[in-house]
Image (cartoon, each protein chain N blue to C red):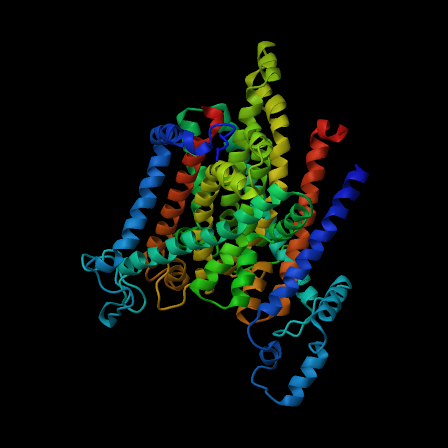
Length: 314
Length: 293
């Protein structure tokens, strides 16, 4: 297993280098002189020359790339133009908020998606299957920012059950924090619940038609035991893999969800950075997301091998 | 000069039979038909926008600010008295255009690269695959937001950003399909009789990879429409006063208590058109799946 992880990490290196090239090129796409953007209203030639020197913009582009990537490897992703804080520090501050939102969303998605998928596969061809499929497809089709707006309208404005916006750190008030995050997490989890439901259904359908399930039934085992102990346990392999892979979907969804519910997380940081033309932050975020996504992919592969003994032997 | 006969019937010769079988299967699938009807409805609405007798999408009426739905304004009016129905009808153009154009960009770049990668293998494949993996590593919307931010906010740039973000999906699909087709006996025979690379790709590979590309294209249009609405919602897509469902929702969220209809209808429209493309894509996948024949 260690050799496998080592191999996967080695393969990841060229991909990470390419991501860094891509992120670096993004800045070069910027029309005009980036120094003018940094200087804002200040157009003093001396200031512009100082900024050019400070950001080493007079160096050849290849030297600029290696300076940038060298700094990034040491944890220096640059300074935010807006807040003058190091980008990594900003990401470190905002990430726990998004991780809490994403974790709650994932729990909600698993609680809804997996049982719905199992039931849908077990009752294949019945109205239950039909309804579950329609609900799942609707979950995939509904824009989560609209669902968020509609839920604020119904649950916060009309019924007054949950707050429409705001954030409380989990460490300060765990219950209050969960209460404020419940609606955003549900909104973020809907699409993922739909994805999980479809994968669970398909995995369960393939397992339920296998010989050992027929044997288990022929032995006279209770249907609940057949379904949970024999079928679901084997269907878990693709389900766990998909769960690891929805990371990207969660992060992208968090951008919009945090915007609607005014949650000061990673997603809101991206949007604020974009509107303030804080390019160092945008670059830092895309780089960190890309690298994290690659590690989640490796984790998915490892989970797949751990759960599937046949893969382990290969 | 004698012509060399085809080693096997070219895919184009069996197409009519296959098409009627696919159509029969598709027609039987009620969900897919519903999807087709939903998509057709929105396409017709978008095309008829200039001739529908309603106020213009940017026409303001200061005497009818945030008016609830009525006979004069069936979907109500917005914060500066514009007709919500009219903005929705014109907004359908932006959404559908964004969906089709961005997927067009993704297909035009992704499919040739994927086919070449799968056909040539070796270094071409290794390089294209590494770039694809790198692009796939950034989540679709984050990539689109970053690109739209650097290119500047506009519908055109949003379409380019979404299209470029979707390119890796088509590279990967076309590469995989090409590699699968390359192992077929008829391709082996065609190579053996010395068909040129271009002839092999256009006559044998491309016709065989069209069905999965069509399915993926339909499903990606759904994703692209949501992505365009998301970018417009964030202010990175269609710019005001031009109508777009996403930007309508962006404004509507500030008037939820006073004018909930401003948020209800544009969101419902996005949901329905995306559902339509998803149902259509699922239906096409089932109808085109050779395992079911």
